[in-house]
Image 1: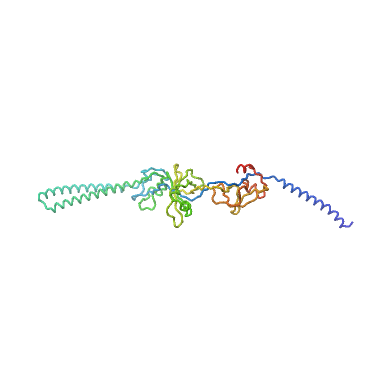
Image 2: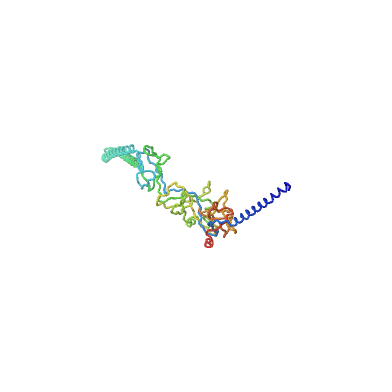
Length: 386
């Protein structure tokens, strides 16, 4: 036997063994794939539903009255009687301004009044005496008229002195700055020793009445037209028919008490193309303070919408996808488009799904991938849902 024949006799059995091994492995693999266990997850059957959507608008809170406290007289602050954030009553003392010079002015004015009263008394005696002499033709008319004019001049000086006294007393009262209304004290930039003046650009503080607060936000021209139903009703009628609105705080929580839109500005701002809108909120717990920012939420009820849970979606490069369960019970990655308006828990689908489609709502992107065999955990849910 030649070497070639010996080599072929050895190779043929090996090749046959390899072929048999590969065939068995292949058959075992197919059998293993066909017997793969499906993944049990929750699913959702798409159906028409209704949902209340919320249009959001940036808003700023202001007290029902925000009164800047400014001094009526100049002087150094000698005492601050309140603190920032303190609730005060109308007439409560807030600041005391140095009273020394104003007390001296009152005493000086009182002395001037006393002197003027003496002058009037003297002039009146003179006038009475001159009148008697004049009646007896002892003095001339000129001398008597002079006495009368002197009396009138003294009386005028007395009135002027009394007016100065009133002004001095009022200035002394102004050294005690009081709250013009009930409210909450704002920032106090100036403390004891600071100079207070009516001409100062900065107020001593602000007293805000926050028993009720206003939330200011803006509506554009399109919103205003929609409110009036293209002019079929007045803005005032539209305001009365508007539902209650809500205020969402900057941390995402919603203020518990609803508010009501009360006014819409009659003029659009040319620079922004918007109108200022004011909503009134009760503030019984004084939670809302002037200067607070957030969002006004205006409810918009809508019907016959394709609504799916947000947890059923995932994003790739700003595109939204869901796993659609096909006829073979496999997960198929499907691109959808949704409305930008949502309630934070659900999406409104505008394309990519139809009524009756089943999507995966559990394990999206983790236990469920494209091609995963799906066994709905809530198989009876679609029928009950419909």
